[in-house]
Image: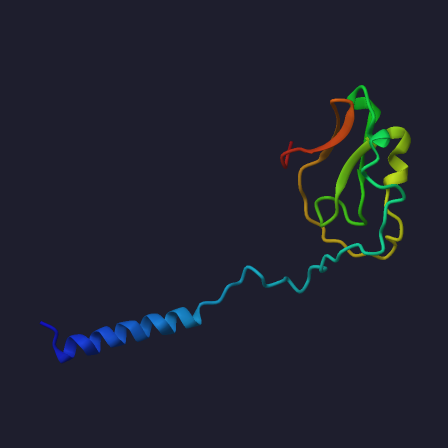
Length: 127
């Protein structure tokens, strides 16, 4: 049997839950004001498109070199790739002077020769 007191208690419980839900705040998107904001490197462009297979040709891991292809390194909003040592400099970005990057850590990038093409592998943090 539902009484007037039951309806009042149910209403108060629902109201309390609504107030609680309305007061929750997500902090996952709050930026640290002391940390630089990473930005896209619109002015940083590699000299040669990364799709050029000849620039990646290799026979051993020693033929390959890691290249950070954006102004910030791969740990801090940039990108990393691997190219044949003779072509690595062609893929380094230009126009990076004065760019701000975060300073986070991550696993090291290692150049490998996979099926005749240089590729970058990111190692686990601390290895």
